[in-house]
Image (cartoon, rainbow, N blue to C red; front, side, top):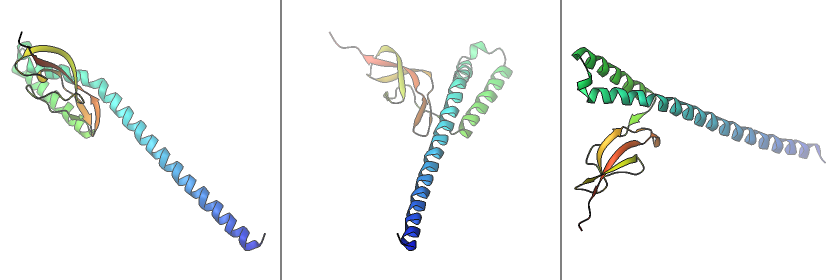
Length: 148
């Protein structure tokens, strides 16, 4: 083997090793990013029941003794929303009367109604991070009774 061909052979090996290293670094970076996102979402999911309790308390003003109680809950609710926003988590916007989207909702009950497959009541809000669902909305849907 000529010295020049040995140099070319070593150059090719070097290029292959460099390409493998670059690919490995890219795969590792993706794994770190995915693990970080999964960790963040699991921590957020643990706090969502607390946020649900705050929202239910605000919706049920009978349980609040003073205006100060309501003001405190409003402040906590706003801080929770801001924290979620900073983490890239947003509430799934749905309202009573909307058609149910099975990708965004978990049906936990059915009631008789005028329309079929519409949201009758939202038990707890859903949340998402980009296209990932952190938790689906838990809803009760209406079904139209069939005429006999």
